[in-house]
Image (cartoon, rainbow, N blue to C red; front, side, top):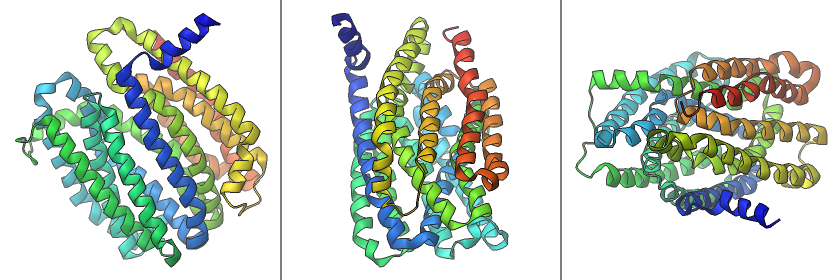
Length: 424
């Protein structure tokens, strides 16, 4: 028993910087979770099904818009660690590229808004402008956060995020009685602007205050795009898995089913992000060990897998026993949800979190080419799941099909491929 306790302590508390990063990440995630728990049912009651469904689409489009960075932010993390002397030049280059992408993409969104019969067609002009700004803010905040991560001082970015989450929550609660989605979007834009600005100031301190804000070198940009290409495909596969089904359901079933899906998705997103915090903070450590101590990578992987496995075992037991009652209380029992649907979401989320450990190591070590192709197959099949299973089996069929696809693709392939190539 003593040895088991010592092993537990070593697993979770042996590294102070790691512990600081995990604690701050958990703190930020806890506040985000509380924000979601407080806001989601109130937003549904205040905005009504139609506006709430539009709000869910906004959240998904923001994440989808994140792939417009073409993987450059994730690629930048590795390069900032490997090429510290070029950090200022790389940051200015990627920042300039993002601004140019926004100038090109914004008019395309307006064209799609006018001509499309899809989800964006239900947006007002103001909501489309707000959505464009929120996508840009999301991409830029991710970029500046990556710069901070490269120093392994993740806790700094998370503390900044805590203030943003609390401020945004209070502001939205104050205007909630108006029942206006436009006011909610204005609050989001205001606090995301401030959030991105503070992160930017912090990033400038890291790369140097004298670094130019804008710089453009076509050859250097081409090289970075090639370097980041597989990260882009990995990000694309991720949004296909987690964010695409909402758009298909909106086209097939309408706002009521979308509202139900958003409630489930946001509830389990809290759990997914909370547990994945144990591994996300390892990314800069993995890259650093790849350079300085590659022999330790297998130990790092098994240690992370053990941590997540132990945590998930506890989380699964608790949520399977009492989670459904918590979910029904939280959602104000707005819909007559079946417990079996909740358990399917819980199982799917648990399997995703186990797979996330291998996926993080594969991405951090740039071993993600083959696995990204497998993930793209998974993402494509997940997008098709509502088309083939919703009409006959409802949301339960969609979740069951998504779980089966995960088990037959990434869940089996990723750990085998990683173990074969890690530390080489």
